[in-house]
Amino acid sequence: MRKHVFLIAAITGGFGILVMLLAFNPRPSATARAHCHTPVPEPPEGCVFKTVYEGEGLDSSFVLATPAAVLQAERKGLDWLVRAQAADGGYGAGSHARQDIRDPHAVSTDPATTAMVAMAIMRMGSTLDQGPYSQQLARATDYLLLQVEAAPKGAINITQLQGTQIQAKLGANIDVALTAQYLSNLVAKLKEQHPKRLRAMRALNTCVDMIQRGQNADGSMRGDGWAGVLQSSFAASALESAKAQGATVDEESLKLARDYQKSNFDAGKGTVATERAAGITLYAVSGSTRNSAAEARELNEVVTKAKKEGRIAKNAPVTVETLQDAGVPRGEAERLNAAYQVYEAAKQQAQREDVISGFGNNGGEEFLSFLQTGESLVIAKDQGWKNWYQQTTGRLVGIQNNDGSWNGHHCITSPVFCTATSLLILSINNDIEHLLAQGAVKYK
Image (cartoon, rainbow, N blue to C red; front, side, top):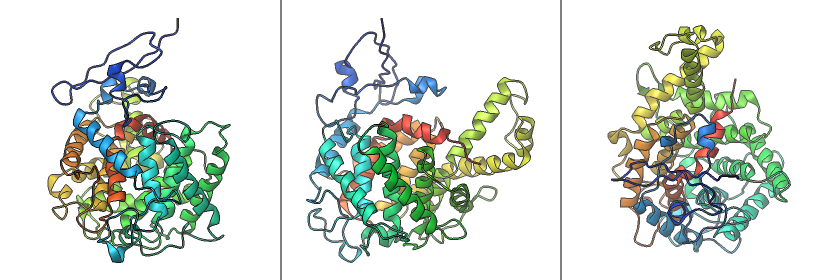
């Protein structure tokens, strides 16, 4: 008799973890359904907890329950967000010149904002074929595919639109980076025979080509905005995600992109290069953390295995020499050690209260930086993600607007963009499997 095993994390005094095993249950119990992150009482069939965590070698305590207050905030936010969809299927943040316009139906749609919303809807439990907002996701997907397919050959972005809030603050070519990230997430969920998979994969490869054409010699992206380091960070992450899904990614371009992000942080001195981060430490260190996470995880796995096999001492420090003793060639040992030192130092700075506070209030850039930090911790299999989640979700729930939206108080103020990013943060524990799989891809 086949048994279905569900991991159910229940809240006990805030964020306590309770793991229960339920046998031979064709549908999740009422308790399990309460933790399937959909904004409706009865989620669709298939909303179950997977046992991939054991397959990944993780203790079940890595999986967190979603607190009741967060679930309520998610439902309110998603309900508001889907109502903001335009007739063409897209979503818009509005013009940088008219940040006072907060009505989502009074602005032009743009790919960057649409990609963020699509990622949020997907992370909240809907797919192209099922879920409470599958139709909205399908329309947003068609909007993005058409934008990519209509772009002229040789272009480095997928839209002719200029001067959006997102472009002005993050970079002129942010649309292609965020769209590539969404398409990678989408392809990961589509079966080989799905009618949209081939089209989505072609569009993803087109986006990858654009990102690589728009790359500067130092690995950054052309068209810096006010905080251009974030555009470059999302472009690097997009290449990483695309590589994980089998897209044609040039290894040298990916290396340059990741090395650029790591170069913004000097692990030895603890100093941060903020020239392309609008002078804000948070923006720079979140990118450094995000783009060193997979390599930091690779190092940890190598060291853990070597300790178990007795090739290095149990208390051996992480150094190039230690990695060589573990069987890693010198060049690879230097690469992994550099990434690990950046990751460990940058993640600490990215979570410091004085760094998080930034301007003293939040703009869209802050929300994006929080998202990068959280995803980094999961990708790296870092148990510290649980503390980050507790602190960050508490902060977001406390500043949600009464109508369910979030908005920035400086720079990127768009309620659509900020709400999508906030939902991606709140529901990050829905996407642990995908993020872990992404971090498992090895790069040279």
